Length: 131
Image 1 (cartoon, one colour):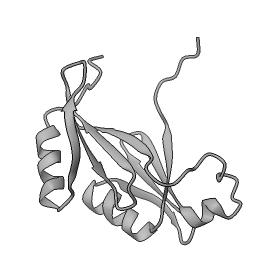
Image 2 (tube, helix red, strand yellow; image 1 turned 45 degrees about the vertical axis):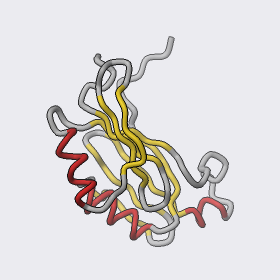
Image 3 (cartoon, helix red, strand yellow; image 1 turned 135 degrees about the vertical axis):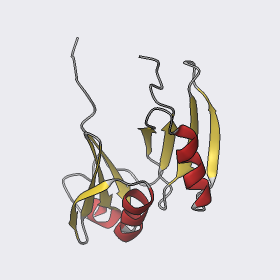
Image 4 (cartoon, helix red, strand yellow; image 1 turned 180 degrees about the vertical axis):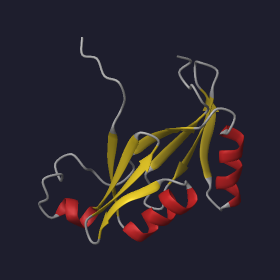
């Protein structure tokens, strides 16, 4: 069996990099590691990277076009311990609509929002799988 220590990075496509930066950096607090106009923005959250590729670049023969589909990709963000309710409240206060919410089998809560491009973000309580 293969063994991994963490999910290092995720890639999604977006229609507007400026809106992605506003959402992921300014609203969610991710650090922008790099930005290449007309191509992509790379964000860091903890020890994980999120790469937002401009959909035009992915569609026009980039090496990534085969595995980046637009829209509605799904990523999961785990809240810091005790910060789930504050995260939910901050997003709602910022005008982000909740798509759905629920409870996982572990008893930990989750809610869903869309980023400006319709990609689905699942926000979970800390230690969501109870491990």
